[in-house]
Image 1 (cartoon, helix red, strand yellow):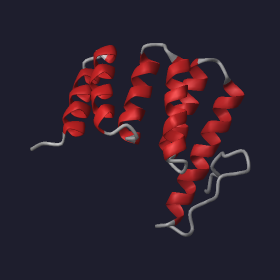
Image 2 (cartoon, rainbow, N blue to C red; image 1 turned 180 degrees about the horizontal axis):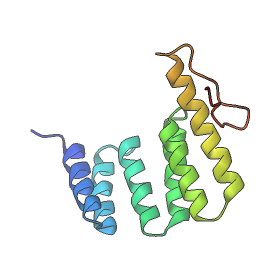
Image 3 (cartoon, one colour; image 1 turned 90 degrees about the vertical axis):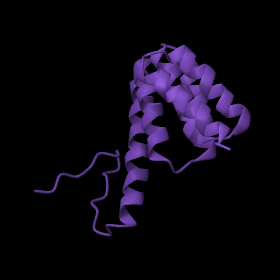
Image 4 (tube, rainbow, N blue to C red; image 1 turned 90 degrees about the horizontal axis):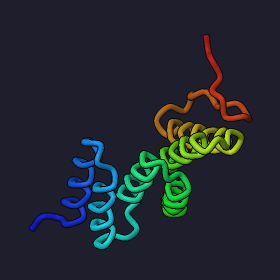
Length: 127
């Protein structure tokens, strides 16, 4: 038997790709009934909420993802985008810097010479 979470998640992604964000959220919520703490599905819900202009909901949902996966740079990148859409630029920049730092730490696992982001999270340019 197929994985119900995967079936609902895939149905949601298909609807998302068609720009049917509200309908996608319905399918994602079905997936969450099977796996309530799925970071992938919660992230998809957050992005759909943001696309619908519901930034407060998107931020609350992505905060839940961050609680589940605190070292996920993608979650902090999403948070940064949602905050930008609310006009909260300093908070968005802080979330973006956190994403870059987490990404760098992951990069170090395969590339020990990866350049460190500056203290503000910006990447150094090496020429």
